[in-house]
Image (cartoon, rainbow, N blue to C red; front, side, top):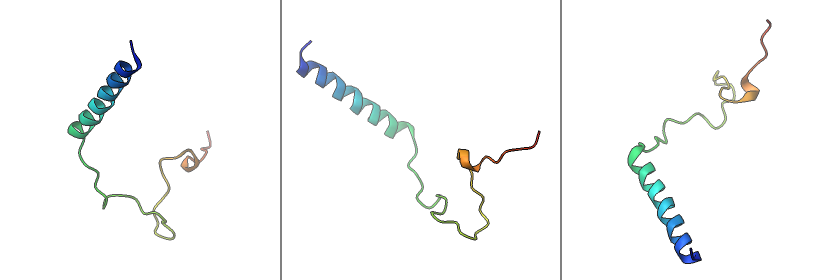
Amino acid sequence: MTRKLTAAIALVLVFGLLAFDLVASEPPDPYDQPAFLALGSGAAASGAHCASLPTAD
């Protein structure tokens, strides 16, 4: 295979993946995001390893 053919195949695959993602997913809602700084809001941290407190077994 030549480089041009390989590059063309790679670009077709990348654009195909992007097209599939745009069709299959819904657009993000920018108003449904967590607060950037939640100082004093009462919102607990979640979703990270630092938010997993050790438990007593």
